[in-house]
Image (cartoon, rainbow, N blue to C red):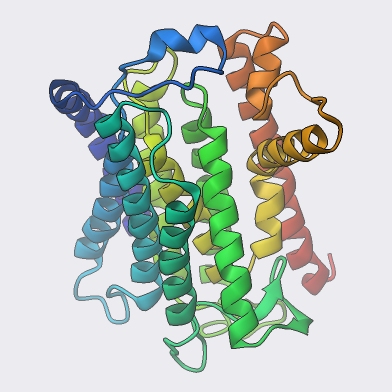
Length: 358
């Protein structure tokens, strides 16, 4: 338990202390955010705010994980694991794709960086590599990921096979990384919502650790690999998001950029895959799903009828144009995320109760 606290504390403290350093450094380098011209007019004043703060979030998460393992050094069976390293690879890999996107925006002074094809290819390489490796590192017959569709645990009749699993894992990873990217449009919105989702995975993965079939073969135990290591990654990420949020709340001193949003969305999907809770993430990350659906609906409806469903997509901009202040939208969307996380954790615990007969 101490290692979990150390991972979270390091992620939080490092992020709080390193973010203002990044603000100063990025401002000197001219790494300012470009704002889309067709967005709400109130956002134009944010032009030039330092971006690529996601580098701090990624660094704090990786650092929190490694420092926690320094505390665990020498304890049998407590070294770094394939699952933990794969999660960090997924986060850092997608963060790199986002970094290239942010850099091109700054280099060419435009609100669009990598084109859609280049971004999807980057996500494809990272996502497929993660998925392939995740079903090939076996320990006692259990791999970091399984080739079954999962909800709260694997759904027995829905076996995918290796090839189909890799395809769906890529779509899942690309979908959630882009969903967080779309949500990152208001100061602190994506960071605060992500912190809550990571907090739910701290609870889920630690519960799986205490009810792991490898150590406690009881009714309802979980067949997962390295659940404690998953807890360390989720805790470090939660701390990193909260520390970054200190400087990212309105008015933001720095933006996470695609560097942060793609990394956070990728890590969320990775956590869902290794904890066998893929469909549950749709509930826990309900805000990200709703924001993405608003864009899909807006585009599809406009192409079909030349009319719009929302004043503007993504969804948070619709409420801004409806007269809500930015802070009102952010706080209410945080509340929606909190309710989604509470409901998702309730579903997770209800599954456990179904095995205990309570």
